[in-house]
Amino acid sequence: MRILIAEDDSRLLTQLDTLLQQNGYSVDIADNGEHALYQLNEFPYDLAIIDIGLPKLDGFDVIRKARQADVSCPVLILTARDRWQEKVEGLDAGADDYLTKPFHNEELLARTKALIRRASGQANPVVQFGPVALDTVAEEIRVDDAPLDLTAYEYKVMEYLMLNPQKVVSKTELTEHIYDQDFDLDSNVIEVFIGRLRKKIDPSGVLKPIDTLRGRGYRINRNL
Image (cartoon, rainbow, N blue to C red; front, side):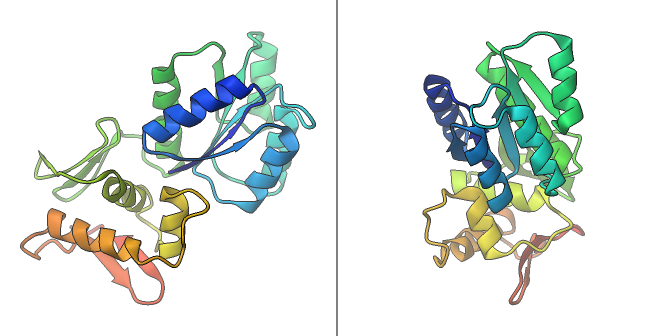
């Protein structure tokens, strides 16, 4: 999953960048509101974490302008302000949730996972199609309740497909959401991951968990 962090405190920005990358997210950063708005308009994100007190353009205006431009990714606002009026203003601007500084890393991660799930229409932390289950809390894929031994990137690919079951997901889209921006989008690594996932999830070739739509991309088989 790809996340934008907009925060002008360089120490906190580095802390959040490290935390989210260590937990398997691809991260872009912005240290002012103008840069954050540009990023939101130019790139697809699964979540934006936006500080209210940004220079050049404050967080409220970033969110309002992004929503006016039809940017639909969930937004978690960070604020050092504990007055309820500011929290309401952030939510009214188009944010989906807020977190007051200082915060615990575990709470930020939990809210991040919940917002991404809800944006995909999945309220339950466990997403299941037939015998295949995605546990977004444990960050594992299970088949018939037995956890699979997946690499971090294999998990990311399957997670994205299972959280977007209505979509045909192109190779480019998958690459953008699991890797940093400078990754070679022409690489065949996605095909390699898909092939490994099919073998690990369905060694007997019966379930057919991932459909390939030639020239378009991949889609989870919802009829497992």
